[in-house]
Length: 226
Image (cartoon, rainbow, N blue to C red; front, side, top):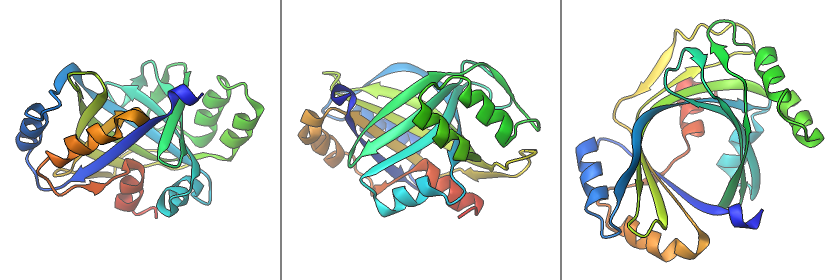
């Protein structure tokens, strides 16, 4: 498992133009270039009734886990090739456990029971099954992502924009209340432990006031669930 551990830095930028952000990324001395096509990302986040994942993040707990379903492309209708992801953090290091899910519909028929049954159908570990049974869907978030890699492939960097959020309920979900973040941009960098100094140099060249970010925390705060 140790080889999967990686650092992850996330920064939230507000009132900065996308063109300025991309210019700073592309002119960085790390030599970033695009490595994938721009695509839309959709996430359904889960939490316990007491919002343990949220408060573990806020409190900076050393061991924490977050569960979500992720898929790409259209948000509503059929979610194609969705993935269940458990994001597991140990201090500043983290890794993911991924499970491929069957396609399912994103519409008013999406409920806690339906989603949990889908998750339980692909997970075999008893500990994770018990954890899933405690979860309920709380947030759907959507954004567009651009992908970059440094010249030496030591640092992966993404730029996320056009973020918006929907509150999710245990029963019927009509998705009629959307909260948009039109000005926010999120930069994420992922890298191995030995490249910490390199990332410090990269960050120092980005001429923006950057604050730490969690899309999950941002989303819950914006929809007023916390």
